[in-house]
Image (tube, rainbow, N blue to C red; front, side):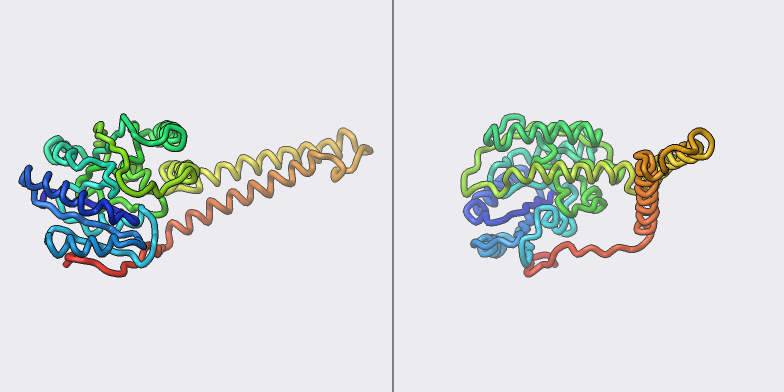
Length: 316
């Protein structure tokens, strides 16, 4: 199979048939063998009914339906696990991503041997205040922190080698940082392509300003995981030792001062340096213990509850 198109969605019943027909037209005109994977992330409208009807009329359409809304990252994770195509294309279901971009994305992965191609919505049709400016700030911070030089990390239109999606673990809200996850997994041939962005035709966006706050918090998380995820003691242990030494230095100074320099002066407990010494040694010890516990956790097996599938179509 040439291409798997993975489409996570939430309450997009109005756009699904049009999107399906558009994708099929592109696939047929380019003679691609393909599958379309719709991942219904707990929709409360008729999205699953539409997906079922499309699956009955087109055997290349497959569907996964979650028991409830688990989030875009979990939807992509389920789609990646089920994808069989040599090249995996992800796109949003709101018709803002253009399926006409698929052939060139496929060519860049299949013939130019890139691991991942990320879309770049250079010209956007979103609100300047609520989306464009926060997005530019977010992408700048992501570039500086991760070292991955992309202009649009959060573009839903991306193309991957199949091996890439099988080796990255997308959870939480880490779908924004899939290129960073791929880089950390060893897939370094990452580039971008300017893609056409279209105004939303049906419904309204599911994301608000809070996604940018969450995005920056996730950025801190992925920076830490990238730098110290496999060696937490290198960060927490170093901070702990440094703070403990500072506290010990203050304590040593207070002891020398009281015993030899000013034995009749104030009590040690009346001096602010005593509390600085005490606080820094306690905090340093806690940092060190946090690093030690992190190392222990890394060496234990973890089981994560990701999502529950309610129904699926044509996956066997």
